[in-house]
Length: 417
Image 1 (cartoon, rainbow, N blue to C red):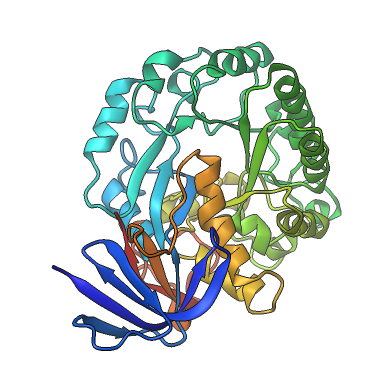
Image 2: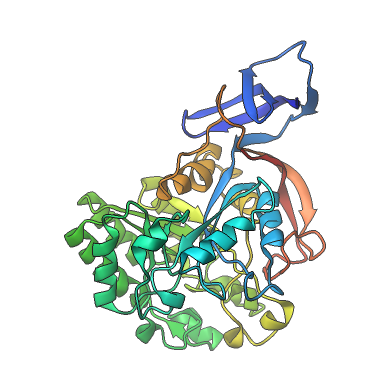
């Protein structure tokens, strides 16, 4: 029997809207007691003064190197990075090699669960090889343990998109789409506008996202299949989603953690290839709109979209680098320092955007911090500092613009069911 007593921890539970100081007793994977003070308990005591305890974080979508690109990330290193970042549920996109587009691929991935933490889930591909050309056997794949369907790539064929919505309606699993018109994006690597001109880099117009999004919203309004909108990045997209939600269109939406923290001006000084992202970082107006959209309920969840690449792949000119950055170990501390410490969001709000609401977008039961509940928990020290270096990261890759910097906030421990 394992018993742990967390002494005087700040307890956050978005489901019950609880934010208070308490002692928490965990026994054999269950929460046995929560009191203002627990005395005379035979348990290992951990002094949690100035620490935060909340439900385990849930990642909506991230990339694995394995299978196919193990030099970037293995499933073992990916799970270690997720646990180190406070995530107890990790959801992988299907764009591996081979892709997760048939039941055998799902079974193989599930067999690679190396520990109970984090829980390893995956999206099933909508199209064969995630190439956007031919639909997978949705019924066969739906019968496996996938959380839902998402290519993780923009679907350019409108007829195929419509059929996906129609066939997916009866499957009872989430469908997720990234809206981007590749013909409009062209070879762009940053958000189109005056800043792109100053940088001398080809731009991606905002309409590459919004035109595709407007079309998808029309399909969803007509067909009625609930969908999740991935990687929202423009202020105009927020307006479109707000209007659609107000009309009862069945959608949820997310943006990535890094689009909340940075905008295109971050690229100006160093042309850091780790800031070459898809979608590209927006302008200041876009970033402000994304932040406000969480306060008004237009956006539901913060995703990590962890995208590992090797040093050799990223150490090239900005426009020639593959788009993406790691983030599982960095998101919680950096978001906390940017939004909770200055009082822009409450601690409960941030935890809700990273835990409860991502679970709901996946149609999963959200974890809670309550007596009798399973101990799916994250213990976080907001004031603990550490330096981001390849040797301190659990991820096999270190493509992040925070490399070499000291940041404040670190996950102390996670518990998983």
